[in-house]
Figure 1 (tube, one colour):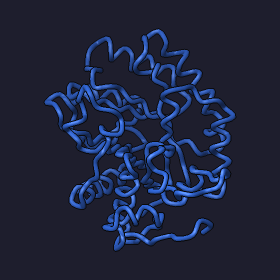
Figure 2: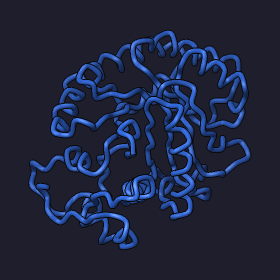
Figure 3: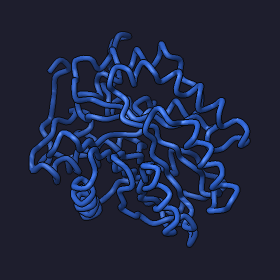
Figure 4: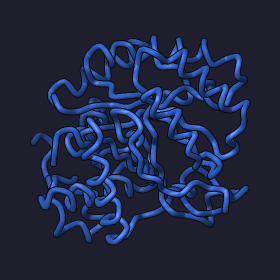
Length: 293
């Protein structure tokens, strides 16, 4: 598999990963980011959506993966880019770029993911918001995730291609006729794929929570389907990022490793704890029983 193809995870700091992805017992100096960088080569930063990241924090991330020269990050834009008042866009973009600058300077940041909610329809007002983001974010590449089916329109892809903005293709639960299906397209230098799972019952449920919404383990047949998608997009793109977001109980890492196995024909390393919880992985991965390999 080409080094330009990276398979990874959305976030790395989940309490329910203890004893599943991470060792159940570890010292106070145990570094979850360094640990996960042993198994995947890209992480999508989730925390940057909820709070503006300090430059010292992103510098720390780069330092902690210094021994992994091929490891990269993407980062979610702050929520004010996409969910706040439109007049907050420029200041939010500026603050996000300032905080991520050390990560970018270190050559570790591939792009920013701009994730819009399901309620963000294809309207003139919302197209103006995208244009404001484009003008404000001109120093770093970005990918846009649009979830409403109204964006499946030729003008959407024409605009993205003209401005070399990267389309984020998503696999999400088909919980409504209005959700966008997986549309594999390359509109810029980076092909971006995100896999949210297919838990349709919980996706829009009023009484659900984050963990239940993303509680889904893709089947072998579904992983094989995604492998074909990766292979088709990797050819026209300079870089490809495939992110598993079905994070509950480490299922994202299970599917990421399975995807690597299908794409390469090799058995990627996996934490011993993960294989214990998901024994179907045994013939697809190489179990790592130590902590210092």
